[in-house]
Image (tube, rainbow, N blue to C red; front, side, top):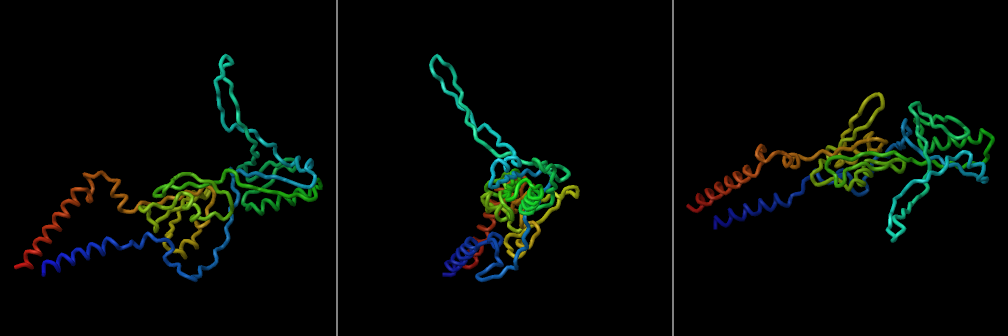
Length: 279
């Protein structure tokens, strides 16, 4: 009877340990039903040198608006070839039109048709739209302009313990770090939720590092790195288990031989306990 009790206790202990859920896996652990997180301050992307944007001007008179728009470029999508008897190879070219873009120069200007150089560095997309619209009206050449600005080359990179590492495009304002993680397929089970690093280029000031704990909603939402900026790099640190797996098996304290020895020791101790109890 005593032996059965010992066995039952050991099985229960293993079951409890096996069914436990690590607390460092779940996101936003401080959030709950009807929880109120203080309003997050809006932080739209601001234009920097080397950013590329498209600017399209429309109005009631298309011929006038055309003066302020760059021409559409024809780009190659692909090329296919087919064999036709004595005629030899015939190549067919697939093309499509794409919008030309403006690149912000090192001084923060774009070279705009008719109006010349326009300073846009530090402006949000809506601010740049309003600024160009006002300049068009002031030029007395167009009365009712509609200006549309889109990002073209803005992006961020995700590295480390995510499902799909790589570089991704920022296609809208107020793009968050959670949006970025989602695009990369979420963190793997081996990613440290409490140690998500965001590396941000501060221009001439160098690089700034932010560490996010995505298990903490209040800390995540209040971080300066919650909203992504162009050129940001997200690095998800591997947890200790993952780091151990990357070491050479023979040099690891947690190698296969270690675990075999540990199991043998536990088995010996259990056998000794059973013998003592049965005496």
